[in-house]
Length: 255
Image 1 (spheres, rainbow, N blue to C red):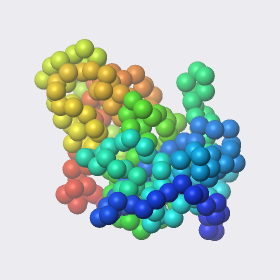
Image 2: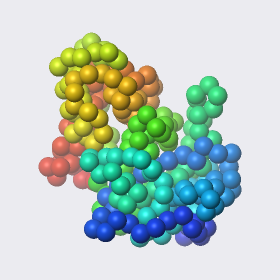
Image 3: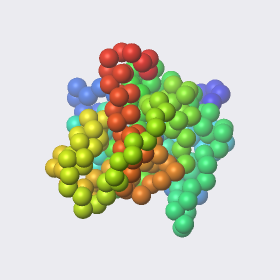
Image 4: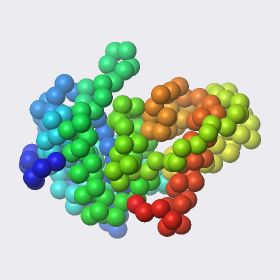
């Protein structure tokens, strides 16, 4: 990203909830044909949606809502017990067509990724946002949203200081957990997912909600297989992410 963002003010915002600090950065994709179409929607008062920024595929950054204000980008969502995500976050939309008919995604262009890194690092610095609170829309709204999708290279972002990524680990040889299972292993995995931040019941039953959360986790940390089942690699990654988060909390890893 070079220079200041291009101003494209959106009327779709209001005041953040009193006493709520900005503690999260939420990434989205537009699921539209191009940036101009997305800007038209994000700036249309009838749409009642917005974000603080939009990054076009060529890397141009548009500023829509002042960070001091509450943009309308997250909808019904939750993370680490916070349910008014809009009040607690800054939202970035990425100009991207989303998932096509076959469910596949094209890669995010290098210029767009570079601009995302620059903008995200500036936001993270301004608001002291920890790595485990740089999230996708699908993380805070599993089962309802699937953006920014498995094509976003979260590992590359983390290498640039944007978000959390676990150290490489060997997958455990354990049974795959799948819908219908009700075992101590399911309960333990639910507890770990809740500890990380997902809004999931701790009832020991692998139901539709858990499948949605597992899919969201896979989109972020295991994009090669998004099937809503927790095989050994997925389970190993869940616990590895929790360890990385705990290390952050102990102050042994720099944001």
